[in-house]
Image (cartoon, each protein chain N blue to C red):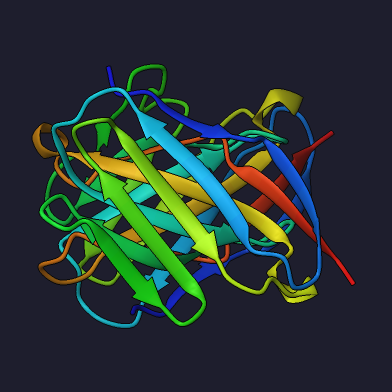
Length: 113
Length: 114
């Protein structure tokens, strides 16, 4: 059974500092990995999707890497802003599981002005 | 991306009643998913809904408690039946658009059961 773990569970940084969020998964036979952002009481916003054949994806200040063999992904957010404060979730899709996502527990980020 | 609308956005319900949550997508999709997010927790898949067939439920979720309809390729409903306070959660609808496998989510329906 696929298990997804996110460390740390919470993170507080001053504005302008770079953020590094970690995600690990136990089964390397993934189809893809997604990073999401969730604001309190809201739905999920897709940030980045990395296919199993890719090693990284970039969008603006966000960069996500994927090391499938070691079962790890890292989300980097450069020059953090107070508006980046949210919970960040990673989720993986197993090849054998269709499009069903298995989520990590999330990292709650606070960027202090 | 996809535009996914959920109704209601939030509701407060009495124990023992049932509530139906609607999910409307702006274009046709094959697969729709329903997730639950309990307070302070991550998301757990309840079921997968394909048009024209019975929903497929994950371990720990049953049709009698969470009946799902999928009458066409842009709409689905999830009913939470005979509610108890333990059903207080955010319920989210999700769809798969395109070849990439990227999933998109609605804004969620926050349910509080008293």
